[in-house]
Length: 387
Image: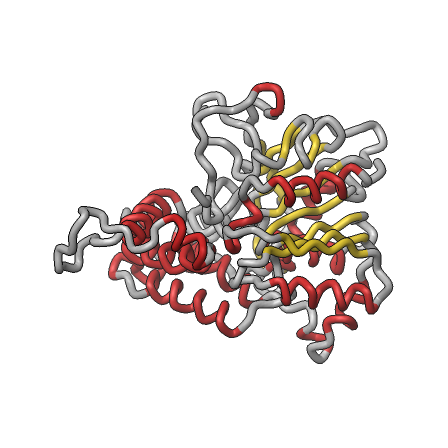
């Protein structure tokens, strides 16, 4: 079953290729951070996890950037939650495509998140209350700047690679632009150099579903002990439709009836309706509404070519890293043509680029799933990274 950008739950793990039991770590940065919007954040915490061992030269570190509703729990399990498997565990571990016998892998929950990093549910030191809607807008650029502080904390001068899918791929791309001397390889998967008008539209409809929920309370729902569950549920249902391909939805559900007959009501008739409601209900139980709003806006704002008269090649001229760019044939949210825009702009600047357009039926969620061809390509690229 596609994970749809949130934690993948599996009951069993293979001990020979698992990173095993992992633990969350947190670090506090007391220096204020000026955000791209001009707002200032008076210090912040980041939640992160690490897998593998940092070598003596500190040259084997890989940063994994998460997508919309992911977080720092990228691989392994928690001792008290053996069912909670990291969202990219199928890719990361001893002998896997991102091999922790070779690499020291770091996963981090982005600033503004709801899995331990400072975000809207955190206490605002100026008021003593939760930030809620007062948490400042953060961008992809701000996330990368905060990740750079984490790299400093870990004494990592240069990442061997930064990798991410979807919104995570945008962060990998931004790393190559904001800190070109601190990244040797950027792996940009199922991503785009900026959102299309259609993608912005989907995000806006999802945001309005949340904001229109009576329990939203102007973004200060936590003060009232409320959660805008109906809005979150609808937002997730909207988003989830865009993560899957039409072929996959047809193959998985078709027009199967939930009860074997038409019941002529607005309750669940079709299996696909049941599936979307299940995904929406589950999401609303663990994700924060303000974080959803902030993250989708960060997606909308990301556009490296904005300050370069919409010339992507000019924007990417700063990059010095080598690139692996991958897309999936049935991904209509971030179609292969969007990845090729990145490839062509990099080639214009004579950057070294490996590009893969992978035939996979799962749509945008393909980057999260088990696909032998996809994982073999990643493995081949990562094996050739010298440390």
